[in-house]
Length: 246
Image (cartoon, rainbow, N blue to C red; front, top):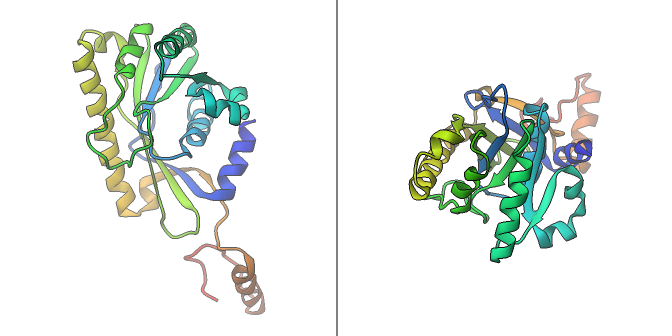
């Protein structure tokens, strides 16, 4: 099933890149909560791919709006579960399901903590209070911030950029009251986002490790003409924007 998301991603996006400094520090044991900002519809695919590449020892799960899950049932097959945070009953159900997931040491729960689409540069992040409460369901888990940003560099498709921040022990966070806990989570994620944004603006691929790469070039008549002229000149055809000019 993950292979289907890989194909779809590479068909529409140019690359998934992780900052060289932003590799996840995965603990040797215990459940994980990975929380992120929420800049795009593509975040769900990024979760799936990042989990597959970087957290292969974990079973990954993620909440999704119940209505959306009915429309995109395929997500259910890869660990998504429906939630309705618009009602107290839905919020209680989310906490119970999350607690069940995090009761196993080899599971990871991925959360878009803003609860809405928001630009990666928006400050403050205004994380939903539920992320601070969620930690109470698993006092022995590790909490890791994940920054996500998208941008266009040289190719037709967009680039997806990610970076993980420093892991936090749930037990340490629980020493703080909920408002202070939420403020700490917000600050940690904002710090990672700001640093990632600087790398994205630099437009330097050397600052990143490429996890997945799409097909370069524009396609269609334009690339067909470039391919033909390269062949006539006896040159290997490079479809990338920085390849040999036709």
